Length: 397
View 1 (tube, rainbow, N blue to C red):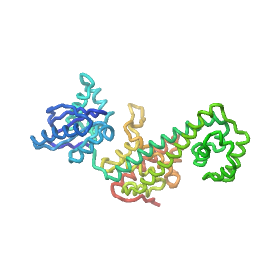
View 2 (view 1 turned 90 degrees about the horizontal axis):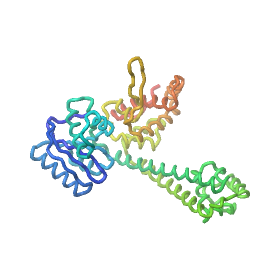
View 3 (view 1 turned 120 degrees about the horizontal axis):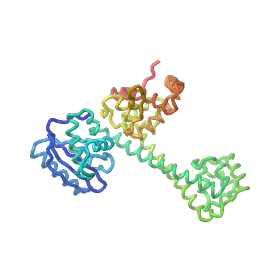
C-alpha cells in the first residue's frame, strides 16, 4: 500500500529498451523537468546528477516510479535502491486503465512518464489508485538468487520440451517404429542410444555388446532394440536429416545436465522462505525455490488475501444484482501460480485432511484445477502465517 511522505521529489520513468523518458515533479503536482536518458552508464550518470540536483536544492527525499521493473528497468532499478530512494513498480495493466479514463492527447513515452507522476498525486487522495504503484521492498539476496536461478531453469525446461516434441515428430517421420520402443524421446537411455553411432542409420547395426554398454540400457531394452533392428526402416530423407536428429538428441541431453546443475545450485541457496516451505508436505525443491524467489519478502503483502491474489489462488468477486459469480484475476505472478498449483496437488496426496477437502470440492462439481485452487487458497493463509511468524508447517490432529 502506498504511503507517501508529505513532501518529496517524485520521478516517473517510462522504461524503454534503449532510452527512458523521465518526468520530475513535487508532491503537490508541480512539474519540474522532463528529459530522456540512454540505457547505459552515461545515461544513468546524467539521470542521478539531475535528480540529486533537484533533491539537494530543496532538501527532499526521492521516490521513483518506473514500469517494467525487473525487465528493461534493470540495472537502473537496483541503482535507485542502492541510494535508499523509495522505488515503486507501475502496474502496467492498471496504468492502461488509468490512461483510458483520463486520456492524454497522444501516446508518447514522455506523456507516459508524466502520467506516472499524476498517479503519484492521485494515490495520495484516492484509495483505489494506490494499487497502481506498488512499492518495491528490499528482499533477501538469497531470494533474488533463487528468482534468477528458477527463471533460467524454466526457460531451459521450456526449451527442452520444444526439442523433445520436434525430436519425436522427426523420428516418427524418418524411422517409423523406433520411438515405440520407449514411447518417449525424453528418456535418457534412448537419447544416449540415438547419439551412440556416427550416423542415425547405423542404429540398425549396433551389436548387443554396444547396446548393453549404453548407460540405462539393460537386457530388456536391448532385446526390444534388437527386435526393432530386424524390421528397421529409414525414410530416404534420413540421409540429410539423421544428423539433425542426433544433434537435437544431444541438445536435449545437454539441457538435462544444465537443468540438473541449476537444481543443485537452488538446493544450496540458504533461503529462509524456502526452508520454511520445505516443512509443508508435497512442496518439492523446485516449487519451494520458485515460490521463495517470486515472493521475495512476505512484507510486500498487507495480508494473506494479497498473497493469495499474487499466487493466483484467489478469485475476484464478479456479482451483479441477483447474479453471483467470480473471475480469475489477470494480474498474478504466473510462475508462482504454476509452482503453487503443482505443490498443492502434491500436498493433498500426502495430507489426508487436504485430500478430504479436495474430494469435497470435486463432489460439489468443481473441476480438478478449481478444487486445487480452493485448497491452495487455504494453504495461502497457512503460508502467510508461517512466513510472518517464522514458524514451520505443523499438521494439527
